[in-house]
Length: 273
Length: 157
Figure 1: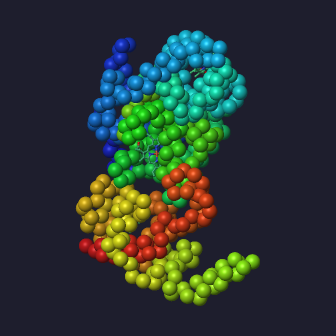
Figure 2 (figure 1 turned 45 degrees about the horizontal axis):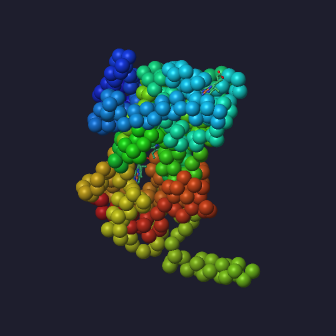
Figure 3 (figure 1 turned 30 degrees about the vertical axis):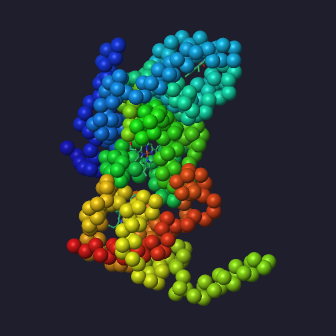
């Protein structure tokens, strides 16, 4: 057993399964790291494994999972005729199941426009162009509810974000941001989530900063947090000027961070501390 | 015009009386990571040093370091070496250098530079996430650095 760099790492020994109406979903919460992480990480872990017993338990049962309220609220909005001319998401897309599989491959480069898209971009395209509404705030409640609905349609599917072809330049940019030491504290994502995961930074047990669980219900905030929002928080904590949620920089970063989780399960809506 | 003159006079005064003023972050002289001269010219206060080390908004050294001599600190981190016995391992000058800018001792260190004001990428205005308004003050001032050093030199085993 190789202990190089891993000796201090202590993700919980636990497995995640959730009973649903359609049967049991078994989640991959740890697996071999994708090829490009060779020399950086051998194994990738879901952030779920770094949380306390009670927090992990909340995610094992949909009745206990506080994020489900937001998912339900999102489903109501999915069906509501909120468009300028009475359009609804359901009117064009039928049930949310039509979105199955999408979350597992996002962010991605849109074939038609060549633009890097995060889920929020797709949603806002429809909200503005197809429903005639003002765009939703990137980290607004209606946006995060809808992210929850769409993410749940890929629950248990394996993250498989594309990093080559048209995605390559965006991915490279995201990678550069990941390893840049920002702010007065001069810390990069990698300093905390690659070099020191498993260790304690004051009271916080550092995870690998994976986003397979997002959007997540954060007990500390008593609300949903999207990946874009989390990035803002982590960069702010380095005493840096953050990038904005939804900026080109954070979109590229989301693609890169998502790809570091290629092989883990989409958790639908997760629970974190 | 007048304002510039006043400023120039003040600067001249400050330069003329270094013994009574703190060494500015840019003027700190590192020799192989160590800083021989006190930044204030006065001995630090070890009790204040403990406060700086354990207060989140100040040094928050315990975010990364355990200090066995401070068992009341809740949830110290374990990212960095425990500081017990650190005065046996380093001289006062070396400790001052590590606290002022650990990167001068440990290449590429994860430990933040506490007495440095430039060379940052996207420096922010504290923890607001907004851009810094101008040149940043160092995370700790000269007195706080000396207070921390005064405490560290007591950590013998």
